[in-house]
Length: 97
Image (tube, rainbow, N blue to C red; front, side, top):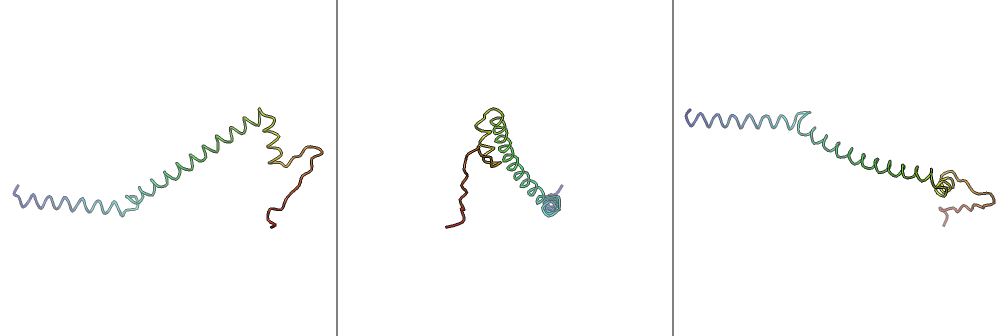
């Protein structure tokens, strides 16, 4: 194969590669979509980690409520507003100066 034909073949090959890369970069399922999917996977991984931490915290709270009467009383007072007989509740208006 003469040198001129090799150069033409090389330039043709490089032009084909450039065309394929351009097509991949601008095609709906190309590089842009891959980047969007990578970003979505990263975001979902962060959400998953946050949810795992929440599940761990809730499991710890369930164990405490099942076995610790003080924790059960605290939860009843804080979440349900329960008071013991004879206790007086004072509510302060936090919005007033």
